[in-house]
Length: 239
Image (cartoon, rainbow, N blue to C red; front, side):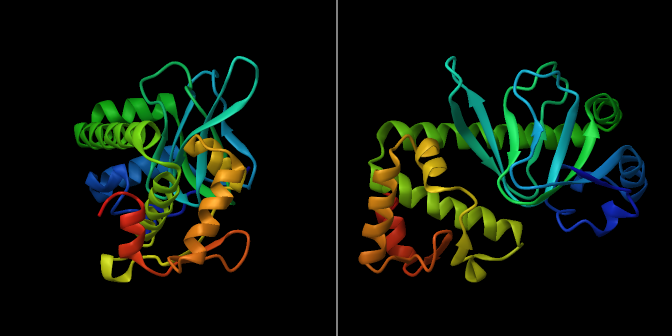
């Protein structure tokens, strides 16, 4: 990991208006800036390890990271994906519940948990933002339970691609009219399969079916182009 010194980083931060610190004024941001460091996490590097002491928290500035946990026999299970403006780590906690690993080169604004906890106690607005984020993540977890418990393989793949497009659009501050139609998947086919509770063969089969139906295009192994959003919504069971 590479550390960068903070130089007015809060004022120039690209996720400034969407991160949990958006409620802070300039003086408060200066204080927060002094206790944080921008860190570059290279693809495949782990920022936080499951089971370790919860000593770090961070805002994702750029890139995509995975949350994963290990089964008793050592297998990895991906349980979530985080995007720019998402908050990772466990403030006011003692143990890290998931490993956090970069799926591509990423940049985070990192704090020691002790310093962040002290700052949050002194700034209730930040605590309120943390609560809002927690409730949003709870809603997403419940939505994911529906996806894994009730949706078919085709609906799972379509839902995942639509969510990826939506989250990446939010990351680039685009409107619905300027939504992301083309993006690179940060996950491999196998990682998608693990996340969706499917086999890699099923994921590949469903992607091929969507491409043959003219709903998406797959220019290369990673790139996805959504050609027909309405049809994708129907495939996801949203229509």
